[in-house]
Length: 102
Image 1 (cartoon, rainbow, N blue to C red):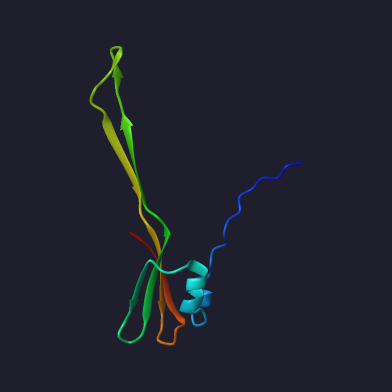
Image 2 (tube, rainbow, N blue to C red):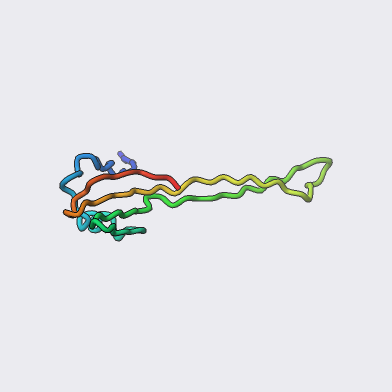
C-alpha cells in the first residue's frame, strides 16, 4: 500500500506570540527580514516576503481560413507579493503583526 500526501506547514498563531516572541526568535525562524527599520523610540518594524508576486503572459493566436493570424493577442495575469510585517517594542518583544499584499 502506498500513501501519498503533501506536507503543509502549520499556520502560526501570531496573536499568541504577542508579548513573548522576540526579534531574535523571528530571525532564527524566518531568516533575516527583507526590510527593517528601527524607529526613534527603539521600536523595530521588520517585513518578510512570504510569497513572491508573479506575472504571467499568455499569447493567443487566432486560427482562421486555414492559416494563423500574424497578430497575436496577449493576456497578462499577476499575483501580489505576500508580506508579513512584525513590529517589536523597545523591549524587543512582538507588539503587533500584519499580513500585507503589495
